[in-house]
Length: 565
Image (cartoon, rainbow, N blue to C red; front, side, top):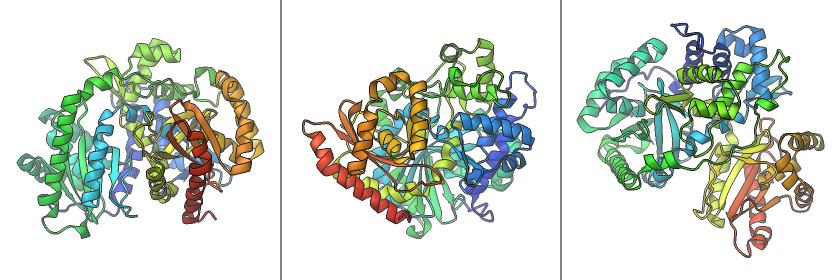
């Protein structure tokens, strides 16, 4: 058993987030080689997004300047640009910035391209229930491990791992397992990266590294005893073979008070190993890696493009930052990899500009370059970007059990969403019926006019805010407006009469939806709950007579639990 080390550091996860923001800025400034290919403005803008932590959900320009060392004028220009693109949201009440919904939606194509999540999800859920803990799936992001899927068998307020959370690679059982599985040369390179780029992590945890690797060599698992959260012990197991050059690691964390001296090693570890073995057999039979490469991409959601950027004479707008973020948003759900040629075709940028931006994003961990295929995949950094926003929204934790109960009752999918420009983006999802092919997932974006959730958002906001949004929709997405704009008035009527809005196959032919907003804003944001069920001959009547009242009741219960009424 490993010894507990680093126990003198309080709340390692939050310190890791703080170090990550500093590390991100340090590596985002011109690199040691001062490569002229490195786009410093893009790096500085991404550094601002990395300043947010779960405990710091709202920051001022002064905060950004202090945390990055950038001048106030530079920070002002970058925040202006990020707010215009939806990555930041300005709160007029406190005159500070929050992370915007685009920080969440930009990582969705990455998640959607990982079919392993869908295969692993029921196995993870089963083990989480048995262990009364949390089972997570993660990948490496530079000197961190980032969660790409999590199943909880508890609702402990002290330990709620979530998609996008990043943990120090040396401090976490997941990270030690990744290092144990890595080839010696790869392991040495990552350890050197920790030493040089994250010295605080190295100083705190390198003493236990040799023992961790020895334990892995002996039993193919890695252990952690309260290193991330004092009361949580964990065991981690990596997959034997990488998928698309990515090594995936499974982790099971359990409250210490539920464990006897040997439970973690003798009971939970073998169950986790067996779960991974089962998954690997499923993957081998279904050829997941090949499937992920061939998956047909979904259409790009309507969002900001170069055509919608300000005129060139807007000196406050940081075009290099905007173009770099546009590269990340070129990926479509289900699309595993893109080349520079694809970026050029989708953005209209020159080959030289695309090459420079892709190089910078790769250096920062937002893209991964496949030297054999000569293309790029999204990196784990796109998930970490939106994590502070998601983890800081207490309403998600409060709503989750209510959403899960309703999803099981109606055999549908219940989701919570917020607006993202001309779309709605999901921030919490509880799928309940496999017959709905396009099952929702955190970060998924859907056209605001085509779905019940978007129509309920329009009905819930003030008339002034609604008019501004409708004008932007008329101009920004004319095709969507022409086809669905006429339904806005009907949606407003439905909301006035019933408190909900509907969608009868407008988003997906085999699914009907009903949506209801929260009675009050949360963090200056209007949030909406949506319930989608498989379409049947009598489905419309069922929505009105049965599911709609159940959704209204669920929303009311969430509001009471959250103290909104």
